[in-house]
Image (cartoon, rainbow over all chains, first blue to last red; front, side, top):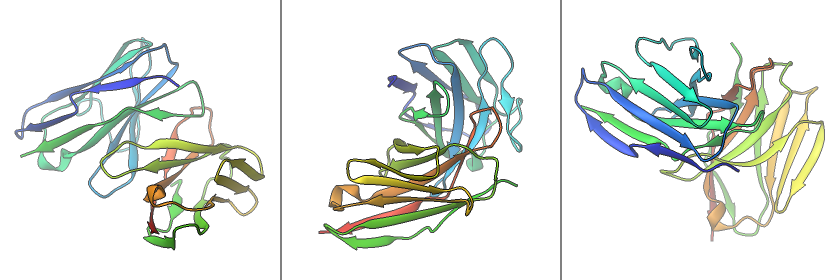
Length: 112
Length: 112
């Protein structure tokens, strides 16, 4: 399966600031997704990152808060904008050739 | 609202026993079902996928699917302390998008 990396692995940020998380895959993949895992919770899909077009967001997530880029088939970024303590979570990208999805190591974000 | 339900546990079993993890889902249109293992502080790891009614075996793991009852299970034979983790059930959204809905996870503890 593809090797997936994320940067940064963790960060501590001040409220009101923004953080951009990178997801890099070692091979071209069709599907790329961004998830959030809040403390003690399961995974919630934020959006599907579409190559060459705007991301598709799930209910409760908006582009102004979580802008996503996907310039090619191996790379995507998720920005968490105007952060508040409620944004403290693990953010994960996943990739799949189709049905099966494989996760990156995650970015642990703490907002003070 | 499409949902995936799991007992949060913890499910405690002695080493060498069979661990049985269960999952129900609400969307009858779902066609793809997955089990992920998540160790504390790590990202989810895909361990089983199942698409047809019946059993699918892979080593010590057996996934069982009953679409009529909207029920998926994972059996772990000869449980080892290294199997102690949270097991997440994931179901596709029943459309062509490959998006997954995750259950809240069942924490498994295997006692030496």
